[in-house]
Image (cartoon, rainbow, N blue to C red; front, side, top):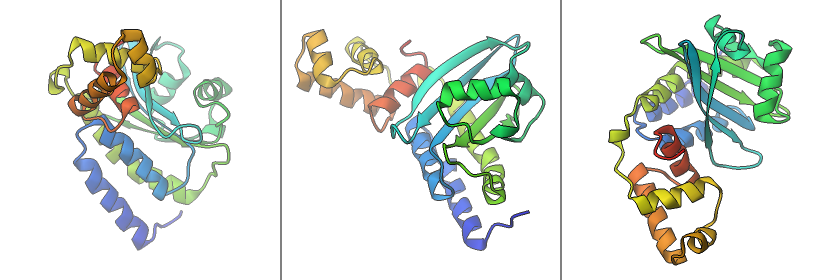
Length: 237
């Protein structure tokens, strides 16, 4: 078993201190990017699975070789026979992707493109209602004891930070105006400020003014983070 060095443990402690103060999806996303300083990866996926008759997953996903921002999507499926749900239900704490059944590998491939090398760790919430899933991978991702040790130590702390965000209420966010919501919906569609100004028949400066207010109200660091937060809180669909 790999024993982490003193400097590595100190870096982890400093990282945990940052996680404790996180109060927004934007800061959480930035914290996930900071993990690249601990070990290299190209793909990171964070989500939670809620167990019920119809289980659901709220997930964040990014391919870092293509984009530097996070996107959010929600997935629902009936629990019976779902391979990911069954894997989590079985209490698999840490999984190397090449060791999972082919059906799960196909599902990972559908989300991550060619990234079929990586780890997924899981952690059940204190109230036993949901499980966090955290995955790291890449086209050249290497299976290593050091990486496994770091992920095992990281998982409970990252999961706790994610659960706090998961439980945030819409009332915690400042209300967006109807104009801001219209702009936000077009941002979700990938439109630029100029394209939105043309569609809504307003000036580009006005669009940028609305975007600035949207980011401030949602405590988002950029447009993509604002869209992710809005989707997570059902402000837009």
